[in-house]
Amino acid sequence: MRILVTGATGFLGWRAATLLLDRGHEIVALARPGGRERAAADGFETVHLDAGDPAAQELVAGCDGVLHFAGIPDPARARADPARAVRENAGTTLNLLEGCRRHGAGLVFPSTVRASQDPPPDPYALSKRLGEEVCRLHPAPAAVVRLTSVFGPGQVAWEGATGAIAAFARHALESKAIVIPGDPQRTRDFVYVDDAVAALERLVSERRFDETVTLASGVATPLVEAARLVCEAAGSRSAIETPGGELPAAENKSYEADPTAVGIGFEPRSLSAAVRLYVDWLRSHPAAEGRARG
Image (cartoon, rainbow, N blue to C red):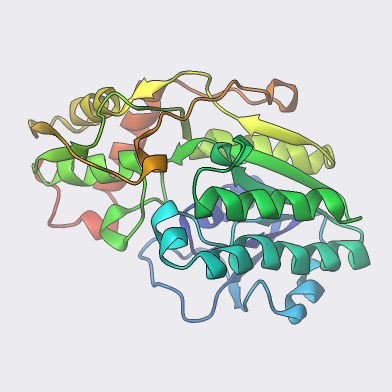
């Protein structure tokens, strides 16, 4: 297949493009001009163009599908600039759907399980919910995929990546304390990125558009337990501190999801196995050189 991957120098986009190339697909990689330089973001040529630029519609020509990872990927940045989050998560989606309509491709929109709540709990979830509605209302084929807490290779806290397990792994490898503010028993459904990419690949290859699915392991893991798994995988004696304290309301909640994507061949591996793979990858990552002492 020929697939346009937006956000190709970010965590999900880079990993998806890398894995799909390894599996023999042709990739058109799109990244925002002037984006952050990342040590792992190589291995393929990248077109530097804003996903909201009408010129990006022409990159869809000849593609079977679009994996649209460009956007605002985390709640903190969306809270800081809600209008930009709507533009990046919904406006760029409309632009690419126009390209799909013109060129006969389908689009996969990676959303969040937070967007399934009524009302969405924060600006990030709301911006993703608006992106979902754009997909449902536009005539081009589109699949909405609600993701839980995806982690794995390509997610590097030293380079600014967010995510609980990424932060835990950084501190474990540096032999620093892991601090979990708020309720340490709040849960997340963690999914390894390679498992998620395999499911998205299946969606495009089978043209399973015009659906809304959730990629989830179905296992709710307390953050404090995830931190223990990371320390075990890293062989680290880092203390796990739980000072409590106030967080934005949406951040101190548990987000659980029932897996509804079995029909697309989603078979997530265990969290302990996935964490070991991720920690091993981080140890060899250039950003970790000189930092990992665990």
